[in-house]
Length: 106
Image 1 (cartoon, one colour):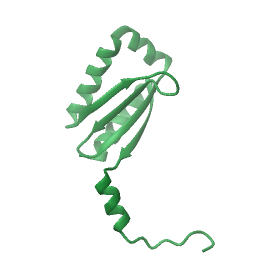
Image 2: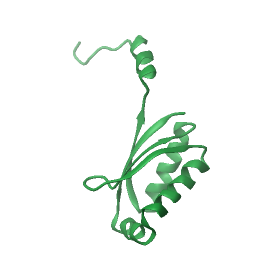
Image 3: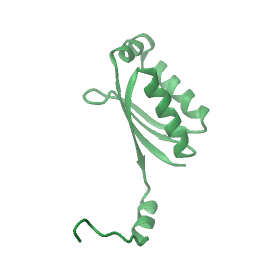
Image 4: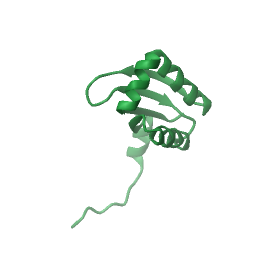
């Protein structure tokens, strides 16, 4: 399954919800969303600084990740970034593929 790193920052409204529900309430909500689309939460951490929440999740396909991203962003409670994570084998395969690329001016 494709794996994604999700970095999120709460809006003031989202922080108020976190204060009401607590971290375990938010984890339960995340688990419901991810498992509802056939995925799995590998890890979830709360942080402070530029990001408030950091997750590593598995989804059956990138479209599922996109669906979650759209729903979460539309809620107004969080601002998120999702980064696809690749395995060592996937990078090795990519390195073996021939790419016909000419740099600008080259």
